[in-house]
Amino acid sequence: MSAAALSAGPGGGRVDRSFFERDSVKVAPELLGLLVTANGVTVRLTEVEAYRQDDPASHSFRGRTARTASMFGPAGHLYVYFTYGMHYCANLTCGPEGFGSAVLLRAGEVVDGIEAARARRGERVAFRDLARGPARLAQALGWDRGDDGVDMVGSVRAGGTGFSVAAGPRTGITKAAEVPWRFWIDGDVFVSPYRRHPKAPPREA
DNA sequence: CCATTGATCCCCT
DNA sequence: GGGGATCAATGGG
Image (cartoon, rainbow, N blue to C red; front, side, top):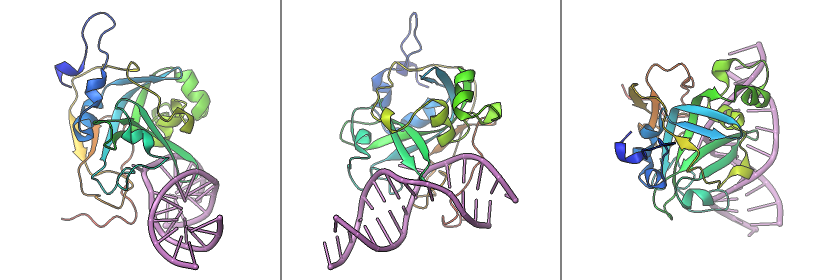
């Protein structure tokens, strides 16, 4: 996290819009450890993935559509999509307006609003699994397609520091599966179990 | 390992 | 406007 990304002062530690108005690959690792609040739940981000328009694995790769419009809009907003007929996943949009890019929020630790998170995720769900996985995180934060486009600047603030960031290939994709644009907090238990896409080409030795 | 589930998009008519 | 493939996943064997 660069010092310039955070505002100082009382109630500080808030991330401003310029933080998001950069390359999503740059923004992604800096999101780790930050706190995101929505609908009465706060999550500390532990795992993210970068996507951008010149990337075959990105929803924005084939150009702007009704579904992906928010990826092309101003930075610092939500891009929420529906997938596999049953799950929502959430991204924070990045880059200059007109360039489709975002960071997928893959996992986090619920640090506030545990009751609300449990009510959405299920009373019998293990604490560790409340937001461990992109669809789980979106559900814990109460997000669905109706939240697409919501401005999140002001709902993201600094958390603790003093961890190391690890990087590796992204999960669940078949294209550009070798690009190390997945970032996570090394050793954190609130990181999703890594699963390569079944049809992704085998990794080189 | 595999089923689930439906929106979205491409490409053709 | 329709057929068919795809899909940034999860949960249960």
